Length: 431
Image (tube, rainbow, N blue to C red; front, top):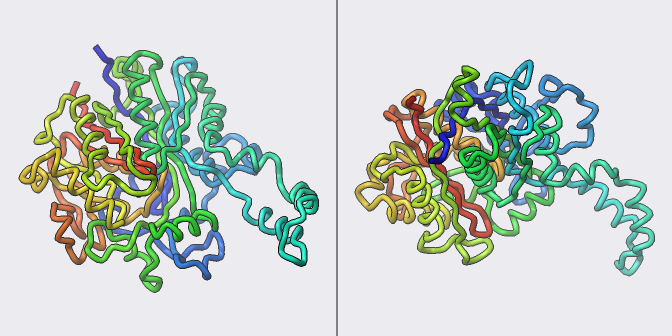
């Protein structure tokens, strides 16, 4: 028998708030964290807005701020969310657990990319004919680049810093399966706990792609919204007929997963039980989801089977819901494949990306957090900006306002570029 796995700690740092309850109240109120980009000058880019974390101060969350001077925003947000998750789980003062059986698994993106040093080093090395003098480039780069900052850009650094901060000596993993990363991390962390390899996992996601290379890349892919510049909070419009792409966000959400008996022995507060994980590959194209939704449907079905839950038992679906034309249409189709036409119309579905933006590698963990809170409070967050229904997206997406829903079991979806699909099933904890 697989061991039961519960969630005993949650922490978050995102464009709406620095902690769980404030985030939840903002989501229920339909607030948006999207505004003009201030992290860099984006005035010449097609997209000039994003969902950013403002006025962040790392000091309250770590023992030694100086050790993280060169860390990227992805690390900083993970340290904040990880701190709050560990405190929430009851590890504020001491690690009341075997550190060799406490691991870390993050879905995390790259850290700070030193675009400034790169471009200035290239400019210094340009010849009159436009070619680059590589010797001059190497000299300029050696003068400008910081070795530790280069190390900090690696996606595994958030997991490494979290492990060091809390003395967690169990397995340490990191993956970057694009927008599905933190859902995959949590699903694989679930398997590590229930198969007995560890007793606890600190898991979730962290990311920030709000930098010149990130915004330029997604603009070239025509994947992110460019309008309306004068009302950026209206730019993320999942399932709306006039949607124009997703809006970049940043932040982190971390959770403590714990084997049930271990949690009971130490009297931990239990938020919910994680019961099912499904994962699949589209095996199709790098940036396009399979037009028949076979990958998303497969991950949802696997998660339901793993949980031993029938489709009609799902009370709420946290959609991937990016706001791109293709994703929203195909996710709708995939839900219908699994739930049937009538069943798909019954279950409320919403996308908090309409409020938070797309946190990329951190999106899935943040969206699972909303499922946990929906179960606790019997409320599901809205999809804001859904003003003009798309005939191809004809399900119940909880437009504009939060809704009372008796939630016992929820399904959370994450689908990433490259064709990675991951789904999780979470249910109210019943002893």
